Image 1 (tube, rainbow, N blue to C red):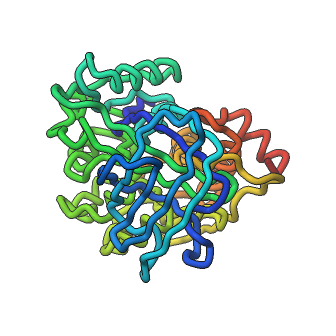
Image 2: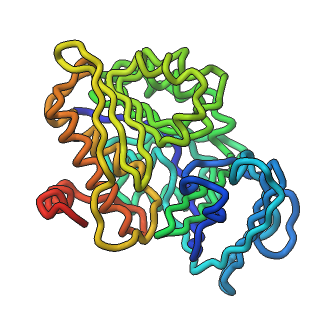
Length: 362
């Protein structure tokens, strides 16, 4: 089955810290959702300032290459009231391949269509190098005169927080996705693109259409997801993202499969049985014998293995046998548990997923 993936590839500058980003007394679950960032000043250190005045300071290691300064975040770090300050020491940092498009292309073995800046842009050059190194086939759409996107990703490892702060370049300037949208695809994946582009990509001819939204998709009203939900067969997101979608029930009833993940609390899958009845499955997080090293890419590992299990068992949009739904959910959960041990870009193999399921534990 041919696989086309429409979504961004970024350069991730990853900072790992030794504790939760927000005092656990102020939030009920770990942070897991992307935000946009803007530089306020170039003061020493790394300070994150949200819209209600919460300030998170990252105490950087001596070898930090920059950039430094105060970053304004597009959404709150925690629910009101705001005005608190918190400092978290960093353990280390690294540059890595990022972006949901790159993740799904790698995990699913498909061809990635994403934007890059001009060939002279150093960030674009590095992203292209990392994609090639990861074995991802890439058809770049060049946007002249602007750099590629990059992300400052702050991760608390075993504490479960993942805060990607995006600095938008070429994808924000992209007006259309080019002629490849019209290519026939057995599986069409659209991940984390602005809704106007996601709608365009999902309209192309496909057997199975999978949408992996980011938080910004849920609040994007240009257009709202409900206006093109009839072009989505499978949607997978985390609980925090799903709860930000105002008309989520209007979206849900148009899908063949909806999956909402909830980190260490597991996941829930809604589907229609062959008898035409609405059904729901819940699964606990796959058992692990040790804390995670990093939660980055867990969502992509989960969703990619869920989709792979479905299509490799002959699934097509419409109804889903309960035993297949459970099998897909279990394999997705095991894959997500496995990727928590990887610090670098990469995903577990099918054999590794099988071994984890046989063992019943990572």
